[in-house]
Amino acid sequence: MKSAHFLISVSVFAALVMALMPLPLSFEPFRPDWVLLVLMYWSLAVPHRVNLGWAWITGLIMDLAMGSTLGVNSLTYSVCIYITASNYQKIRNFSIWQQAVLIGLFLTLYHLLQFWLNHFLMDIFFNPQYLWPAGVGMLCWPWVFLLLRKYRRHFRIR
Image 1 (cartoon, rainbow, N blue to C red):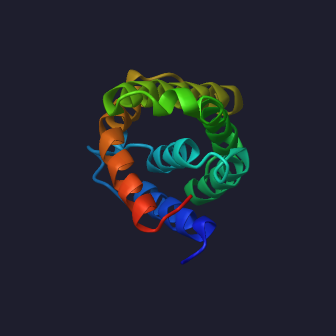
Image 2 (cartoon, rainbow, N blue to C red):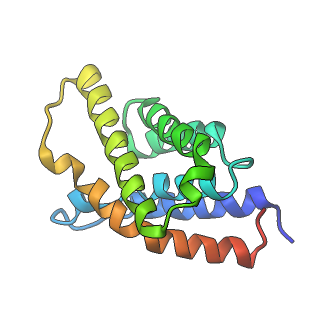
């Protein structure tokens, strides 16, 4: 059996590839936050393996890959993962659709923190379309959850 950390890294890398894959300009505002969705799944499923360290490192990799201000994704990922990891026992008991609504709120928090930090650092202005990925991510959560749960059970990641 392969190492659990390696298998989790493979899924995070796949999410990173999906986050960087080019889309038509008309679909770009609707791109879900694949990396954060995958990190949130793993922090709920195996919180003893995926924690703030994973969020911080993955956020730095996203900052470098996207060319954004260094540390913005790290901070926002860490805040979201802290909330999910500290409440994982409560969130696990919700139905998949209740989890999706909660994940949608976390994604909204992520985007608002991103906006606030970028506004402070680069003086950007708020556009309501900025929150579309949170809604799309909320709709994608059940499929992300089911796919990663099947992956986790197949490879017996504990």
